[in-house]
Amino acid sequence: MANKKILVVDDEKELVEMIKMRLEANDYEVISAFDGQEALEKAKKEKPDLIILDLMLPKMDGYKVCGLLKADTRYNKIPIIMFTARVQESDIKLGQEVGADAYITKPFEPETLLGKIKELLKE
Image (cartoon, rainbow, N blue to C red):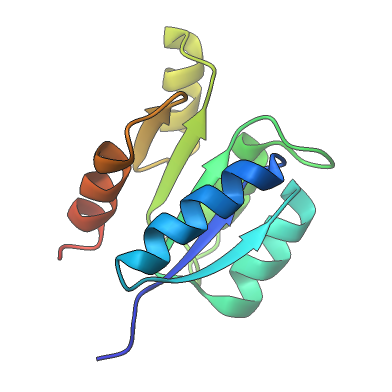
């Protein structure tokens, strides 16, 4: 079976690299994007199995990216993990309203992220 493909979106390049190494060590194929516009384009082109999406991004925030993907029947089945330093209840609620499947706050435990990925991919 082919490896599951995960799109990691964050404007912190070091963080993307760290997550990418961790995911690749767990046999996931990783593609990355560093702003909201690039995230939307790559999600549509690559059709990943799951998206890890930061909220505070250049060009288009994570809420908008998530909302646009969830509103499109071609992409609305892709699980999206909101990944952010914002922990206010209102941020979490907004994430749920735009269709996020999970919400993980930074700093994070890699095991927590891997566990959530496996849960959402039903592995």
